[in-house]
Image 1: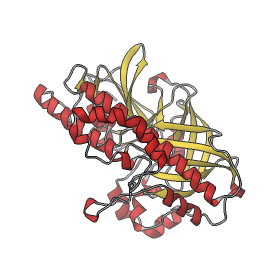
Image 2: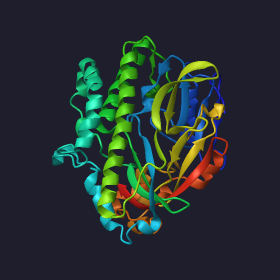
Image 3: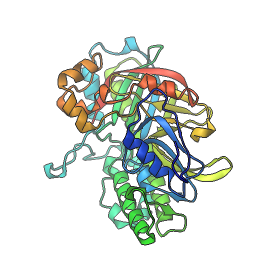
Image 4: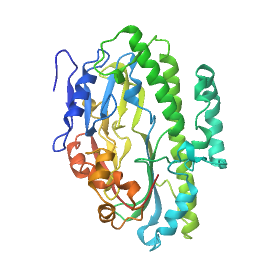
Length: 400
């Protein structure tokens, strides 16, 4: 798949659908002069803003802020406990209630007052994590003052909405795992939005002939390049800390409900899947943007979640150089949220999540498993990228 003088596009999509709009976006990205070697496409690929979700974009001395997106540092954390399935209560409702109480989730539109998705009074875990992030955040705000008036401290250790979730899962040996998915929340969104706007203005000034305005990029030496590198790096630290705080809170909730003593972090993984970082590939120092992709360098553990009601996987990277050491970040959507809400009913949602303690109402129909690609097909398409270490099946799911 190549067009004109564009970089090649290498796809791990055998046996999975790829919509035409996503293919066009891939060609748009590959046509940029800053792309190094080729664009790598993961099997969960689907249409996004500017760049497709499920793509790996290596760039030389430049970064595309909209390719990183606004959920900067979004990713997964999972830990295995010493509990087994028989240690869980028969009725998981009280455990879900305890987790929902321990971790703010969802959001309240501003016109309705206090955001239930943020802390009113942050707990000590949040305060301690924020203390490690505050100085650098203040330095960013000195240069970009609009960042101050964001949900930052009060969003640290909170889930958000959309496809973010907290799950209790069982692996193939019936061991209990805790797994959750979230990113940099309101402050990451504000940082992403702010720098995407600045990149677009930069592109207008330089009159770049971009195939899509959302592919505006900062080159090294540009006015805001260094500021963006610092801010995006900080947001990625915030996202990792956000998941750690939530994991601590969920473990506390589990201990409240289950009297039996247990250990956690027997095996643990915390990985981004929406981020950019400097790496060396094919002998070249490049920026690698993984927009819906996980670092799968040789030996590294990663997490590939399925949808509500589907399997998820703990994987070990094979370090495939052609994928820039990457793998998919999930199953990938096959339809928009609006389309899913039109096509499916609450009855469909109840049937699709049978056996899972979770919300089964109209507001979460957009997350129904049928709105996603078949996770088994996605895993089959990337056999040369990762090995499966554990197969997880959720028994409880908290959605924002």
